[in-house]
Length: 220
Image: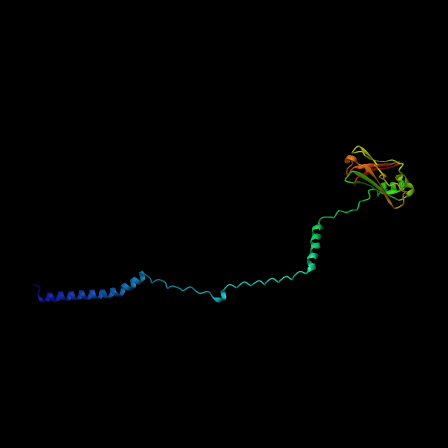
């Protein structure tokens, strides 16, 4: 059995131990919350999204002006625009000219003018190529009389085709050639039968009427 002094000592020791334990618990209760806060920091505060400012709003695109109403065309405007459109279409296409260059404007022209009193010699296909017409203009009737004389046989020779055409004779008409007395400034003609259409456009032919002869005339 412990005696009184030992019991007092034991009780004193227990008291001190309990006191130290209480103090330790008091310290722990103050330290633990701070440690927990350091280990698990509080979540960041949620930020509310900033609302767009009215000053930064995109500018509204400007509305296009309404097209002006077209004025009604007058009655004559349609008809006036058609010739303009047709003129534009035909602007790039040159119109065929009826002008025929004088192939005898040089030495040949002077030769026929001074020797035979004629100019503007022409050879053309007519009647779908069944006939060939030779025409000329009289400048000096005295010199050109040989061409209008029916007594002088007329021939049209085509060396390329190898044919010699003559003036056909028609019933009630006679020879298809003009034989009136020549007059200055007037044009005369005669036709040659082109049976089989042997003479074609572009051939060079010779026309012989008595003593008159014209060489290398181009058939038009």
